[in-house]
Amino acid sequence: MSNLFYQAHGRKPVLDQARGVYMWDQEGKRYLDGSSGAMVCNIGHSNENVLTSMRRQMEKSTFGYRLHFETEVSEQLAAKLTDLMPDGLNKVFFVSGGSEAVETGLKLARQHAVSTGQSSRWKVISRTPSYHGCSLGALAVTGYRPLNEPFVPMMQEMPKIPAPRAYLDGLDAEDPDTGHFYADMLETKIQTEGPDSVLAFIVEPIGGASTGALVPPRGYMERIREICDRYGILLIMDEVMTGAGRTGKFLGSGHWTAQPDIVVMSKGLGAGYMPLGAVIAKQQLVESVLDAGGFAHGFTYAGNPLACAAGLAVINEIEVQGLCDNTTVMGDRLLARLSGLMQKHELIGDVRGKGLLTAFEFMADRESKAPLPTHLNAHQRFVDLAYARGLIVYSRRTRDGTEGDHILVCPPLIINDQHIDEIMDCMDASMVQLSQDIHADLKAG
Image (cartoon, rainbow, N blue to C red; front, side):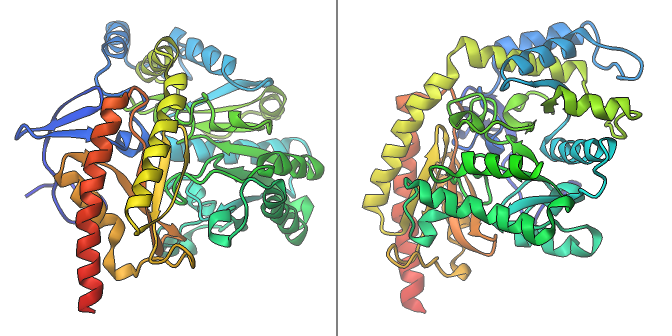
């Protein structure tokens, strides 16, 4: 019996060790980490340069409370991060994870409004489906029904607009009119809610677990920036999953000219070596809050020197190894191979993504886009089949979390052609088995 509990019943093999893109359980079975954990381990496991940097910091100090000391390594990481941000984003607040980062970004935006005489602004518009975290504040801007519903009485739900799922709506994602169509829903929502009440719009530049690597239509990102400017609303980019090189640029939003007012990051920033996240904001925004009496917010481990040492070393590995470039090349090859998989298996109805944030979605019919019946639980069955073959992938339900099955394929940024071959061979075999099982289930009624 285990004394641990997480989301559900069930046990997994005990992890023994991990190196590069591979992990081994205590029985000696090897797994290829095709999802980078939960899209976290961007530079792979057990990178010796990162471990060396952490050991060096451990010999100096492992904790220094921010109200008592500044630390050299946290200043170095903050400076490095701001160098990698769009112009003007030069103030950093460190946290320990993605939900903390989102909470911090939301509260910073609110305090900025209060400190500048705009206290009527408190609503944060987001999208549905979306995922921004599991704490109550982050959950309020999340649009994923199974996660939201139990806690609705405990939180202030925020207004939502539809995510730009052009592929489901039969629209051309390459047509700027499509991007404008979805972005203009933001303006409509602002007008409905009352412009003076809207504080910010938070968006994943490329969809994560809730929409399965959804790339916005052409023209979308630029139009939402224009709309936010028109109404004096802050644009918060949730880069928790898309940041740290995952899409081929350090920030996922870097693929477009729309610049954020606030960036929230985690996952690949610490890359699984230490819990680490960051909020990066414009200086004038932060100064207004500090001048008005200070930021009424904080976490015990904010700016932890060991976590910052890990983060600094992770960024160095991304740069030294040229992992953004590798992500672009390998991501294009992976997407091409996934498209080939779609041609072979009729259950796959869509393939999408950017860089090494990729996904494919199961459908009962490609023409109508009808999802598979929910009772088939296709996404989890595929994950289990792949896992049994030594491949780890990640799955969720695309359509508000209640139906539509997608598989995220997001290996570490260090992968090569051989790793892609391994991933695809395993997924092909798993698809053959899944197709046989589902057809048998449907035939049996």
